[in-house]
Structures are given as C-alpha cells and as structure tokens.
Length: 168
Image (cartoon, rainbow, N blue to C red; front, top):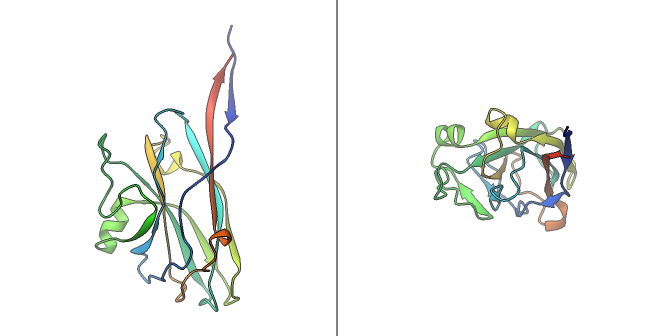
C-alpha cells in the first residue's frame, strides 16, 4: 500500500526588478516578473513570499499590490501588455488590469518612513485560480505610494516554494 505525503521543493527566486518603480494611483503601471514554467515540476501549488521596500518619504496609508498572472493559452499568450519577461509594464486600462490579474496580496504602507520593507507571508498562487496552479504564472507588482520604490535591487526579494505530493 502506498503513502501520499505533501512536500515542499527548495525555494526559488522569482526574477523581477521592482526597484525604482513609479507610483500608480490606479495600479496600472508596475513591474512584471519573468514567467515561472510549471510544466516540468508539476507542482500542485506555489507559495509566494517576499518583501518590497518603499522609497523616500512615501505617502502613509497607501498600498503595494502583489498580483499574479497566468498564461491564456499554450503559445503562451499573456493578457494585455504582459509577455512573461521581467520588465516595467502599463496596462491599457483599470478594467483590463482587473480582468487580467488576480490579487495575491496587499502590503499596507502605513507610515511615511523612508526605505521601510513590507513583507508578504507565504501565500498560495493556486488559491487565486480556483485551487489549480497554472502551467505558467508570474507576478505583477504596482503601488500608489506617490514616490518611486527603493532603488536598490537587494531591497526587494521575491521567492516561491513549490508544493507537491510524494507517493511512496
């Protein structure tokens, strides 16, 4: 008789450059990560965690939105301006953004203290897509702090841990 257990893969870094990203009052402008291909690993979920660092004197009571996107077909085609590569992007409209990505988490910038890091606890990507991890997925990060994000790359770190079932 076989036994099934849940196990976590080693954490992997998500390729994204959220340093020096401009503020967007409507969250349509932000930064996209390189897409993560799950076709080989076939994880049942991925837990995303990390931190984002604000710039100089952000506006208090603002938000950093951590979104997740997925491929639309096997090509792969991504929604609107997303292309699966780490780059700055601006969606064509707020309504397009709302339909193209899912909110993974929101970081509340609660003070105007400069260069403070805000953290996202491990959060399920599959939960954003009805419990199923897409074949290819990535992050889109936008904020409305009224200043650019911190300019140092090492002050923004995003990782994921794949979750799988082991049968022994």
